[in-house]
Length: 600
Image 1 (cartoon, one colour):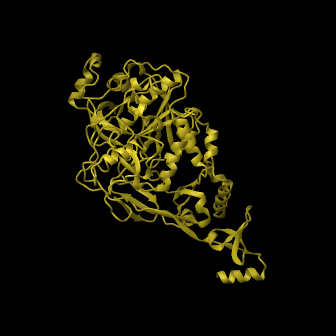
Image 2 (tube, helix red, strand yellow):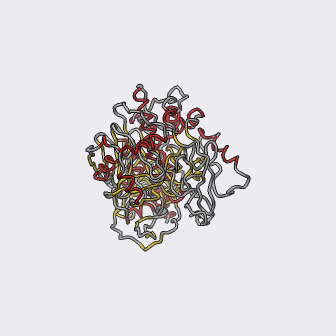
Image 3 (cartoon, one colour):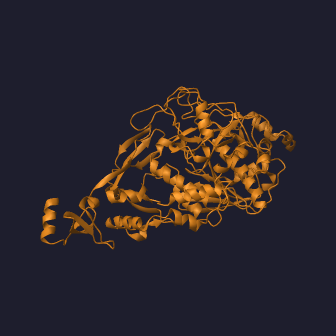
């Protein structure tokens, strides 16, 4: 066939047009260096080898996590959203800016970039845009149906699964998880060779999660007798706020040395995310206020829907975050779980970046095993978090997880899903992202490490420059051979810091319950960070932004209460131990607001 085409092209001296039905495009035969090539009828008008247009090469593949099995093929007309992440050739420049404006010892500290500057630094090359647009057009994708991010680095378009299968040379299947979840997914995709350098990620955002740790909440228990008794006591109970029975706002203020501090900076803000059809409840919020923050009673919030993501914007007060008097937002991803098993981080990041005045601290209490997330998607999501840190000084916190070093089980091994079933610890995503602050958990007063506190070392991200001392120091102090082969000795250490993670007294469906998990730890830490922002704003200074370069400074990490008791079992082991200095159970420990406010 190729020889025939070559001969025809030679006789016609490079001009013969015909249609390729599968792609529905017109291509022109020509010759370059005596090799038969084809040219599309597009503005680019460049000649490429035949296989560049008609052949695909594997771009990415992964194995389904445990608990999933295929039920067969979806209907051809079933629609899916194709998401294309274009290569960001200047991301390394953005990363350099981010570290400079986040380093308290750098002359540029606090000089956060504008949205326009961030967009410019993550924008793809014009060539990439033209080639990808040409490829989409070759399948009849109308430009009017395409949604592009502000930086043009993301393309989203909804298409029938049959067309996407053809474009990506793949086969989608209907998958079912043991928990009953049904998803339409593929476990691999391919692209024309010439597009590989220009596309980082394509549609594997809609991957198969591991079916666990999709929320970091470890326990949610109905009111017990002691809780009812506690609730019936008089307000004077506040004289002993840190009773062993429950954790309240007053207790947290006492624990973290913030009692008596009055926030005064106008415009301070905080955000809490919610995904997977989990929403805020106004009635429960009012009950919570009445119980713990009476000044906030009768404050309300407005519901806004943005592409399946609902946003609760509180008018003045927030019960989620310890303190009142601030602008607060609750981002809650609605959406059909048949389309959104993984949290839609990239959709959410684009939305936040588009806001004129986004919250300056945003806490997220969701995550899943890192290995269950395709590397390309994890990398692009992490880069999105970097954009938040660089733009307008946003701090992003994530729960470190509730499975210790993996599954929270000291009797059962954890295995890789690369087909080799290699025993290994299971660090969490997105806690392992280099541009977020991962929050581990503690329990009791005085605090010790809670046994479910997620921690360890990322298999996707290497140890970072700001941790080149403390993380290797912990690993080097381990006895020789400790957990050999179970964790990445060169990986990014998790978590960064910690906060209380058990026995939180809250309201749910009209009653008092006790909840726990690092899902409680992350917003708790975020509340303290927001208080620190209040101090800076009051002094005319910018907000803290990306936090890690700051807290890994010796003078700053020394202002955290070091947690040296406890461990985080999992994967058939007792996990790591909390110890002096940084450790992969509680990081540097819990914040001391009274000390930190004088150092920032």
